[in-house]
Length: 98
Image (cartoon, rainbow, N blue to C red):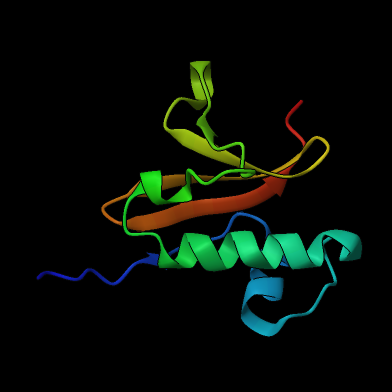
C-alpha cells in the first residue's frame, strides 16, 4: 500500500491559520470554532479533494473565475474555501462570498 502525507500547505486567512496552529479564536467567530476545527482537521487529513465530500459539509467546486477553488460550509453564508493540488490544500480561507 502507498500512503501519502496530506496537509494544509498555505492559509490566506491569518485568523484561521492561528486557530489551526494554536487554538486561538482571535480572528474567527468563536461560536463557529468547533465546526471550523472539525473541517480543518478533515482537510489536513485529506489525500484527495473528494475526501472532503461528506454529508453536511455541502462540498462543491466554485465556478467562473473561482473554478479550481472548493468550498465547505461553516454556517449560514460562511465557508472555508481552498484549492487542492498534489494532495495538499492551498490558500485556505474563511469567507462569506455570497
